[in-house]
Image (cartoon, rainbow, N blue to C red; front, side):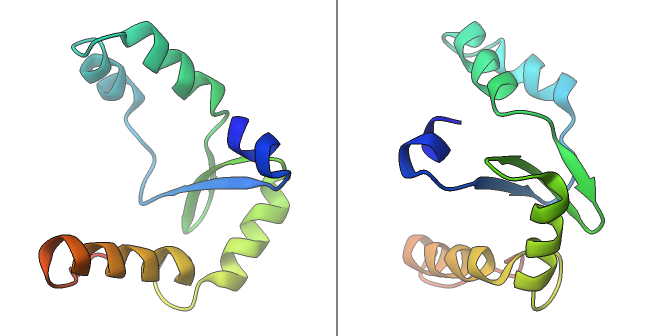
Length: 101
């Protein structure tokens, strides 16, 4: 919500699969400031599924977001801009791109 409000644009978080929230909570409880971290996750909003996408959105409707994701996805289940960003980041960090982009 903070980023979306700051830039006055919708923000979307795309995931490969639906997260196992109980495992996320279990892991976060072992880190410093677990309550603050859990509050941030709760504040991020509901997780939506519109196959093949799993996403969170703030500043737009889930229906509109699912349509936009479908139009922005050239291959696979990841929008092209996100796939490209992942390839570039992997190449910078590892000296090569990975297979899961």
